[in-house]
Length: 237
Picture 1 (cartoon, rainbow, N blue to C red):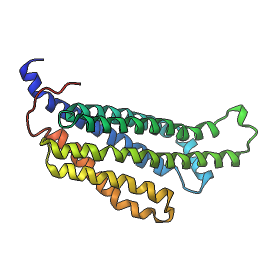
Picture 2 (cartoon, rainbow, N blue to C red):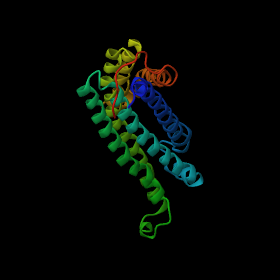
Picture 3 (cartoon, rainbow, N blue to C red):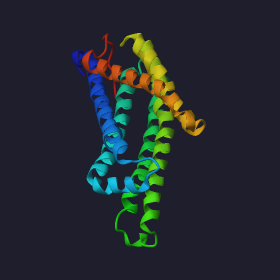
Picture 4 (cartoon, rainbow, N blue to C red):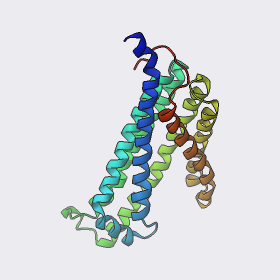
């Protein structure tokens, strides 16, 4: 690596991280807000089943989008690990490991999201179940997917605190971004506790999620537009 390439490598990793972050946000938002939230009718298995079968290709596309988001999420963590490990290698390794666990949970949880397609399909071995039972089971698996998503968010939020700490300490970025990212970690933890301990108070989770969205979108835009503020030595992958 030449001196010039070494000098610009942190900026290169910042841009790559920004692009990966955009893919994570766009594909994840599409799958959840443009598809699942419109097709899934809580408590109404018949309407949910009808929506899924009417828009089967769109529902399948949402699963593929979630998988792309998860892959890019893991790659994002790896690139940020490469960028921030000179600041604190052990802490950077910690958030990379947390993301690895989170990605595995997300991928396994997609089976719950795919199960309704099997239940509502024409597989002969499901003929023992009548249509109402299959619709009810389809909604059950979608509910399980929702809870699995909340569990994964414990780790999805968990990586933001050590990463935010390194952002704060690095000098590459404004310290306010690091503070926001650390606060965002708690924003993702609140939905877990409300879903499992206080299900009647889910509205409490919304302010925390707003902070998380602001923090991550701000960090994503900074990576894309500003990159890193200072030049450092070589950053190796």
